[in-house]
Amino acid sequence: MKESSGSQVYDIKVINRKVNNMTKPILRIQNLHKKFGSSEVLKGLNLTVDEGEVVVIIGPSGTGKSTLLRCINRLETPDSGEIYLEDQKIEHGKTNLSRMRQKIGMVFQDFNLFNHLTAIQNVAIGPVKVKKIDKAKAMKAAERELERVGLKDKANSYPAELSGGQKQRVAIARALAMEPKVMLFDEPTSALDPELTGEVLAVMKDLAKAGMTMVVVSHEMGFAREAAHRIVFLEDGIVSEMGSPEKIFNNPEKQRTREFISKITSLSGEGSA
Amino acid sequence: MSMRYTEVFNSIPYLLQGVGTTLEITIYALFLGAFFGLLLALARVYGGNISRRFAILYSRIIRSLPLLVILFLLFYLGTEVINFSEFQAVILALAIHTSAYQSEIFRGSIQSISKGQMEAALALGMSKTQGIFTIILPQALRRAIPYWGNEASIVLKDSSFAYVLGVLEILRRGEFVIARTGQALITYIIVGIIYLILTSILTKCLSIGERKFRIPGL
Image 1 (cartoon, chains in turn green, red):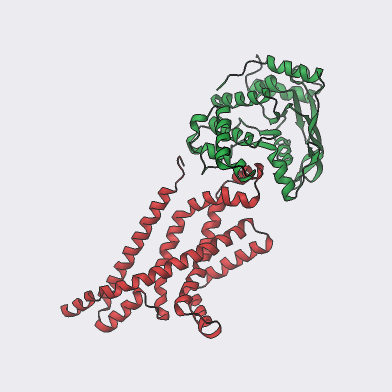
Image 2: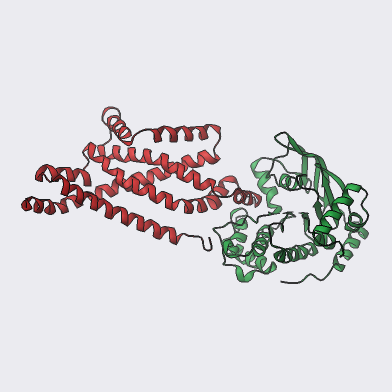
């Protein structure tokens, strides 16, 4: 796998984005509410993500980070509020939902690879079944996606024969094969042993570098510092604070954000970094 | 005495002629039962309110009825109401009976597949039906094989109930041999051995199938 070539690239990218004012919103979330039973998880959340932007969402557990991602591709149905992808509303109704989901790649915490299919079949099945692409062509494309995540040699392995990090890389390739406009990552490394998170984060950094719009729920502060354009601190069902990594890490406005950041950076041993 | 034993042993080819009928009943009943059992299981797991309730009720009622009662019900239905043969009545009765049990087997195996599998399918843009047929069932059916094999050998043995309707399968032929020779014990032993051999072959075939369809690494 390729090593990422440091954070400089990202800084240039941030500057470019600012200078060129390339801020075209691609994902708009307005006044999102979601209840589970009597507990309200999302309480009128608003968030806009620009094209090519990498947004990392952090926040205490139970604060609705995963629910937010799952509402975006409608694995959960919001109680109220609107979500627009490229100015098109995401709503129920078979054709709309399938079409919108094709544009939204999702990477799950516990991979959810299809256990009865090999790595390459996992990657190809979306294009074949959903986009109705010719199988031979889809397999060729799948091979390229696997190569991109450094797993070409594992193409014919079944998920149970792969390590956690390899599984997650296949899962990323599977999502990429659909050529999505936005990628959602739901704590992609939290089910992994610490020594395996690096290979997944490296793939994600490459993806960020390539200009993919990404919404990432993660407490990997190294990744957030290096690859994120914006950090969103979610608390109690709303966006409590957001800003550039420098601002959120070094100079957050709210005391609560400061406490949270110091807690997770000390836990992940980043305090001195 | 030994003359009579010889007579029983000479009847073995006659008994074996029943194997075809037994297998025919078993295979028809088993696959009809699998088809309806699977439909019921899908209705139960993914269906709307009405189809789910129907599947639950069906399974509950059928599993509470003795097979013999279902058999006689169908026999009299076949002679008094609609016209079908004893042979067909037996197959239908066994199929109805086993479909309820198979629906429970399939339901269990479908529900044992983690929720994330369907979510990942939906997230790719698949419809729920696509998710069921391309992702869930291929895994669930593999898991069901051992339990299904158990049910298959039960159906094979239950096919002997056909004798009460006079269908000429193994057991019925055994009754005729006993009537002719008066040797009940030895005849039933031979009949038992034939069933034992059939069940062993069936079990062997299914375990080969289980191995063949096993997902590597799991």
